[in-house]
Image (cartoon, rainbow over all chains, first blue to last red; front, side, top):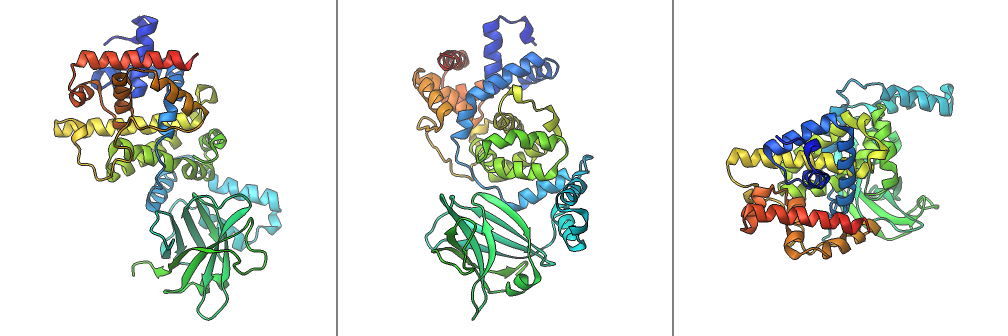
Length: 234
Length: 182
């Protein structure tokens, strides 16, 4: 197999470009990759071509991967030997807030949040728009009812606006569960009072509020997404 | 992808073993990478496998990332595309037929690769330069990039001799580079 070091500069650059484009197959590709492993200059040249063609990758519409895939991947990276992170975050928080403020409850919540094994799902709601769009806000709570996970596959709320999540207990005023970021996954602890309001059949809603959330503690903007809470497995 | 400027720092923090940084990296990059995997593989199950392999590989190899070797986004794209191409080639070898015949279960989001729109400054420049190629060169390059076709598969797809297709690609890429460096 021809090593690119024996090629003319033009042929070598063409080979690099073909590799990045992906048209090399079988033995040609394997030989190129073997050379890549031992040649720093070649790696640089590949990076230059990758940057050139990157706008093609950017032109593809993003698609939110399934939530379970994220949990699977994050659990898998927990298996690797670099297993110090959970503790360094707790150390960092202890530094930031002072060790005394880092009470047992906070520590429990932190270990929970950064444990590679995902906690058991207690229940969920899929919040959708009235219109038949692809936007969706997924709400999950763990079985112990200590934390919630929000996944918002939505457009941005706009300048100076935020999405805010509410639980609508029957016959009572809506209670805020905090703001959420568009196009992002948010995981946060939930207190027992709020957790108790979330029962099978309870409606959850997302409204559009000023940045930081409604100042009054009640929803003020239009309700964009609604959904009903279900227990997992039901 | 949102917060592009952050990807580089997130990869570096991941290299130091920071899992919170890696989950932020996942949130910032996974949807774009998943979109690309679906575009290339056209099957959701394969795309999920490939996204998982690519991101675990990114975690394990984050220490090899260097800013001077290009953007974090391009680094992740290379890992994802390599995994996707491996998968395509493996499946097509297993079935002894071109990968282009795989039964798609994802609707092709851009049926004509030629109807491409790319935003951003770099995207506009690349578009301008692609427009200056001969139509056959442009088509061959875009089919190769988005459908993961090898030279042989491309020749079969466009019903042209292998040598001709190879030279479209080669000349097309050369002209693209020349145009981008102007």
